[in-house]
Image (cartoon, rainbow over all chains, first blue to last red; front, side, top):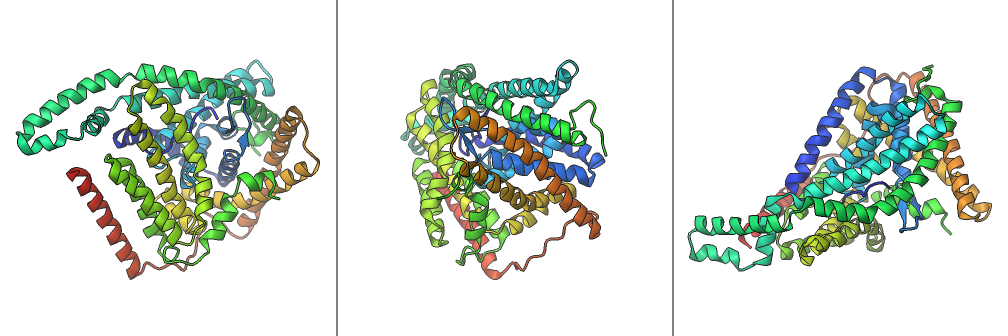
Length: 259
Length: 244
């Protein structure tokens, strides 16, 4: 697990909307490309990879920092390519959200991070395969993509949780439950302006994306990096086996032979 | 004794099992249940007032119990979202967040998961796939339906292989990891070839583009009443949120 499946409620709805737009653009572009190359055999591969990812994400893996799981999103990137893996990531995220493994409102953020992992693994694998063997290329591409996605997850959370003025405005009202009653006694406009001013002050005090990013990254990196190596090992064994026995299904293989 | 996979992968067979039970909630149309769960999740995330937020788990668990679903199993399944939420909520006080805010985020995460369990445990997967596939592009919808079919093929394959591995005893962790990865490699190629055979069988039966899914579901009067009450709940909570 190079990232956390973000649950519902961790970020305000306006940021959920932002990540939905980001994911929508990414998946939309991939869909347009997929329409061109959507032969049925590609659908089989994509559906099959989706099932594998879905199952694998539910099998816990022991790690020195507690139980976690592998993703195999990098496997999806290497085997299905950027277009196919977009569909895999989309369906897996939707299916997982139905069983509480990642939230519904944060689907956009979860899809964006998972898709980033797949594309990064695909790009690094292609680059490394020019000089290295299948196993080494798949292993390194997986480790690098998972570490990068850990950084991305921390950044997504830091921006979404600490960068929302509305959220701080609401936080301010929680901590000062009597404040809304001032509306009864004073001009609403004045009360709103005063509250907005204090809320923005509080936002400036608390809103430190860099602080959150550093704390979260430092705390999650040890577990994520250790699991990244386990995942890289599994991915490279599978890619090597597939590249030997069925090279026609590994899209990222430079010598891929379509039959 | 359940095998490793059966212990940690209770979802699909259990979902299929529970979704065939009978209750007033099971009998509702998939669209009604889907719209209810989605709107409740969005409402839970939207709410800011702690009193209103604490009402949402009560609604979710009451419906779970009323739908004759196993409350203990649902609580066990919610350990996963609870764990993810807890990992995040631990950090919030460290950056100066109020502790109550972090606790409410935790409650929202777990409650939202309960609303989704309510949907998935009362609706057959094919019905859900059919409704979702209506709003997706054709080839994506097909892939989604194929996925729901392949899941059972792959699940059989995984269970068989894990059972075979378990029956050979418990090797040291390093060896077990090697065996598991080798097994996954074999599983990948074997599973893909099995999926390909399904494709050949479908093609030979004249499959061209869209997989038709038949269903006996009808949108009835009670669904209209249910959606109306859903809208009333949304309006009431939104109003209370503004007033409180």
